[in-house]
Image (cartoon, rainbow, N blue to C red; front, side, top):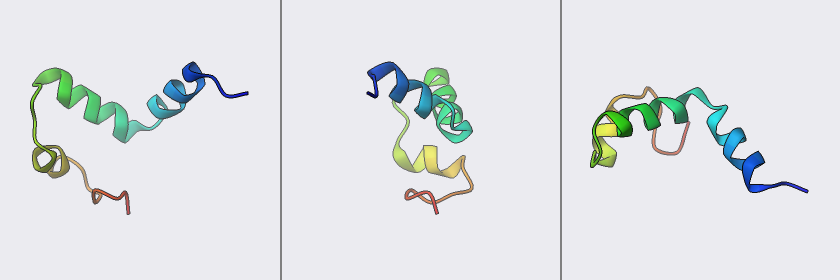
Length: 46
């Protein structure tokens, strides 16, 4: 059985997701384009 906590920790295990959270904590209200420009991947992760 997968719990909500399991899903949260699985999501936080991804360094890109943690980086995006750091960006949002630094300045809330960023657009998707602003967030995308900080990563070397596409919106779809490829």
